[in-house]
Length: 259
Image 1 (cartoon, rainbow, N blue to C red):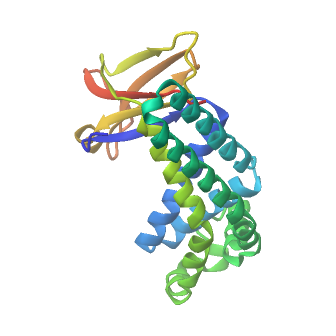
Image 2 (image 1 turned 30 degrees about the vertical axis):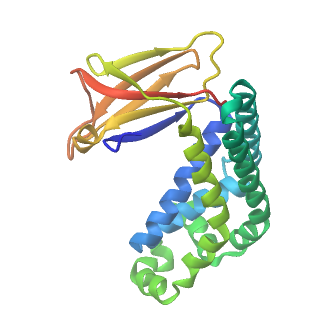
């Protein structure tokens, strides 16, 4: 992928939706730990917990994730049959997928046990239910930075339990990009329509937006169904209402044939 492109993923199937949401939640968790931002960490931990345990309005996502690994493995095996010259490399790819899939299964019990008993997460969940996300009723704004820095093991302990999943998800994310080319396109007057043929089995759209475009506050929004996808670029500016873009914009498109 060009270093000038920011990839924005739009899942088209429940399996891909689970994968993208889990990937993004894990990334926010890592970024919050890097930035030493306890509120962002708690929000991401809550999201990860809900997805793993199936709480709130979330369903457990691991069955969908493991199913996606299985489908991805079948895809590579089919490619190996069509292209014998690449059979060894594709076989290694399948073995890597199977290893990471097993690592997710192995990591699940310890990670979910930690999340179910974590006092930080319990307190944050109570705050959300009481419509007190900053934690005024627990005096968190007054103590959270001191508590966070004094109890730094909280983040590292959870990270160590999630690390096999993080590596597995990032590996799968790389594999989804590995054998699909970018298609350069133009969004006329800030919009484009993507139509799939009846035989297409596309599970994920990845829109590559130039960094300069994102820097100007412009990003894509998708709508529609699996056969016809409408793409529109919208611009956000500080202190202004979001507006549709009406000039032509170059972008790249990747259609991943895994559903």
